[in-house]
Length: 103
Image 1 (cartoon, rainbow, N blue to C red):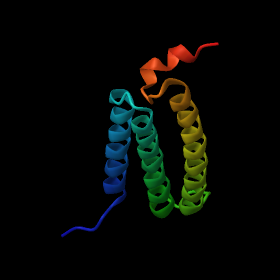
Image 2 (image 1 turned 45 degrees about the horizontal axis):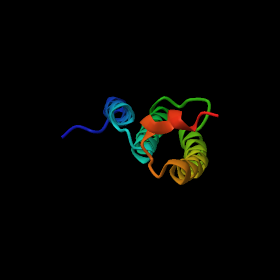
Image 3 (image 1 turned 120 degrees about the vertical axis):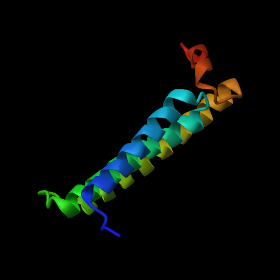
């Protein structure tokens, strides 16, 4: 059996990215869209760590991935706050009804 190469990680990252993009396009629920965004960010993390390991880039891949994880946590907290406000006004998290919130 062969060893795991950079190409394996890149394919995994591409699959995660495609799944996240498909989730963001298909879902109408705001929480589902947030899950898609998190999948895209995880795909970026896989690529950062893989390139840091195999290519020896200037910035350590794990440090960059840690930064992306912190950024994703902050993004999720802000998004949940927005969704809660959205739900309070419309009693739904269907993003297609967001145009009703125009001022």
